[in-house]
Image 1 (tube, rainbow, N blue to C red):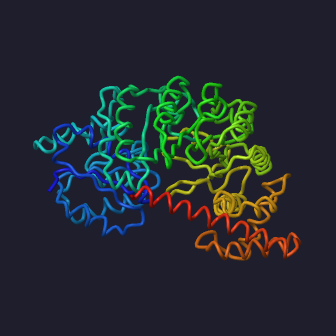
Image 2: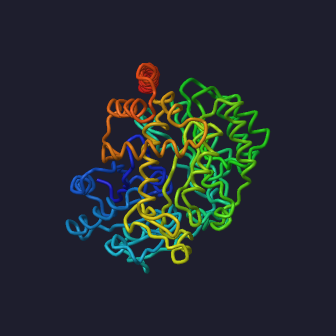
Image 3: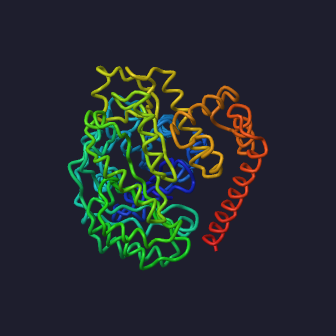
Length: 486
């Protein structure tokens, strides 16, 4: 039985915990006395506690994030009732800020704030040797990245076959966007490139195909980004999929030329636009050349096969509904395959909280701490935006209603046209979840014929074409999964 269990709740099974692997890789000689346990969100508290206690650990290291904060709090409370002697150590961004205000931190034995690889190993050594650490709240020193052991060898065969492989080439962010915890970073630190390439080479040789890079600004250093893209291009095989988060207004010719070489379906670029309102961007410390953003997205769509996932945030201080609608239409006109609309969140420690009073920002007190209202958007307007975001995800971002979405949205005022559909759907269903695709297809057809007065025959033909494309896409996806399992 392991003395140390490293655990966390993943949002979904196909996700893998990069943080746990980083901690495990840096335990040194203690690694042979440790085990990792990845739990899925939605698992009942008693079952999660059972899985941990069955291993009879002396120390539990629990990774706490905004997506698993509620489950983690219940689990820690339960474990302390069942096994008070179990030493519980918390880490992760959710407990690194406003630490003393949280019940989960009071229930736990220790909390490590910041990057915890070295601090967690040192703490475990003390506890296992019978030494009582001096402090409950441990401020981890920022590690020199070249001194850290890389975690990639800890991805097992099941991970490679069924999960996304997370990777990072740097930590930190040079920008100061107040809604993001990365705004608290002091610049960007890079991992040495050669050891990374060697580790990824090994993963590729073992059959790994799906990589998601967690760097906030992958293309900040053009030469490093180009070297990594060239590395994967030189080792391309069918089924390879790479996800990078890009700074949308910085895209030199060198990167364009490389992105063009990737086959369709192999490259996804996440571009965080967030807002086109320059006064709002300035207010929250965001520096962005909107003309360059438009130029780059348009060119990427026209000249490359990359899948573009663009982000917008609704509810930023100083942005009203009309401004957000204009920004959405401006982005939609550029044609990214996905637009993710996120409601502003007040993450623990994020500087966006400085606007709480002057902009009357009211957030939910529960994770993920989404905005409920502010001085320009009342509660009901925010609710409409939340429903818009959910229906857009189900209908447009899913890609299975391509023709019908185009007809609904038109070429002018895509936001306004889809908001009308969103309002109508909610008035008919009273729900945004647990709507089957077939029911959604029927509802959209009813909206097109009844509200937009489209001919029934035209709508039926369009719906059938969308359904055929969706089935083909589903078969292709299943085939890709089967090939990965083989």
